[in-house]
Image (cartoon, rainbow, N blue to C red; front, side):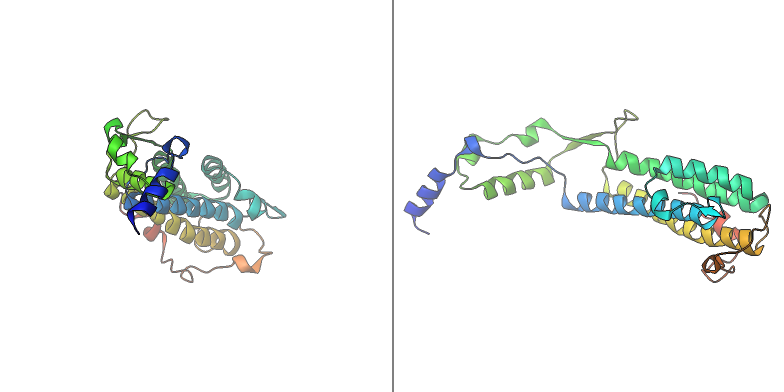
Amino acid sequence: MDRDKIRDRSEGFDLRGARLPDFYPADDVLVEIGRVAIAATRVDNQLALVLYAVKYPEPENPASLEHLRTWSTGRLAQQARTVLTCRFEGDLLDTALTAIDRAAERQQKRHACLHSLWMPEPRDTSFKVGILAGLESQDELDELVRERGRTAKYTTLHPRSGGPGPQEIAELDQIRADLEDSKNTLERLRFVLASALFAGSPAGAKKILPLKYPDLRTEPGRSGWRGLDELSERPES
């Protein structure tokens, strides 16, 4: 491209009418935050499925799974505690409540991850006049801001706690791994609870309910479950 064409294009790009994009951290950080968000929705889905598996609120009038999926984590966890306490006892109940409480606690860390304010250092968001004057298009401005955002230093603030939000890859990775662990635990748990409630195995249901939905009959072992120890002896994060 000759100099005249470059000059014409440069003169056609007016910074005064340009759109200044926002600054975002490095791509690997954004990717990990996205994984945390997806993992968190899967935990909520499993909480809804736990309630559905024990036929909340009544066997004759089961709640719609689609309706349960609209509930918040807090509402799902609280309702699960109430229903499970009414229908189960002993070690099975203790194990189930521990799994519910741990999932709800881990979802709070997800909240800190997804709702923290990311504030770039002011000096990292300023540009020399000469750099801006050399831009020839909105695309170039967009790329300049993206590149600066990737290398900028950020202060994170979680509004609810008033403390710093997570921003290191290792920290975000641990939140995601913990959510995946809770999702897997709840998935196994719902089969165990349904089997106890409708088939009497394992022990722990206060009352065995008549099985009107054969698809919920899942014997221990069919989903990979090998006993209560597998659910209750998982390492703490």
